[in-house]
Image (cartoon, rainbow, N blue to C red; front, side, top):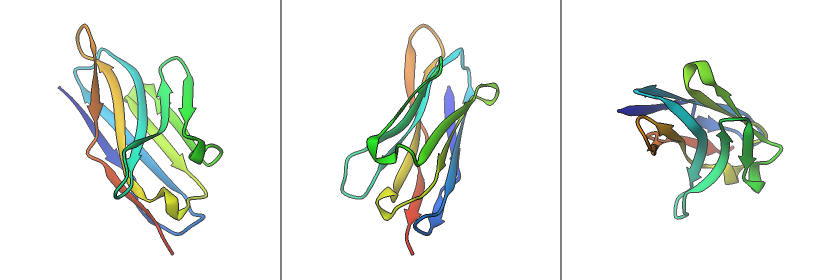
Length: 119
């Protein structure tokens, strides 16, 4: 089995920064993609940023220029550097990975970490 363990959420003032980390462990053959989603109260879960193995990244329009996704392939990890945070960024952030453990890739999710942007 595969587990995703997240860290780095918390409370920050508007304009501040936070860094989220997520590490995958288990019987991993290949990680096809890793990324972050977020869900604010009363809203659907939306993609924040994704890094597809091979170097392609994609960001939600609302975070472009403020958030940066990066990978540490040696540690099977993905990080999200969040700068210039706004109250609208408040949400539960969840790590997602598309991982091959056998023939077909499978979607895996972390437990979620709360990010609150407030003065």
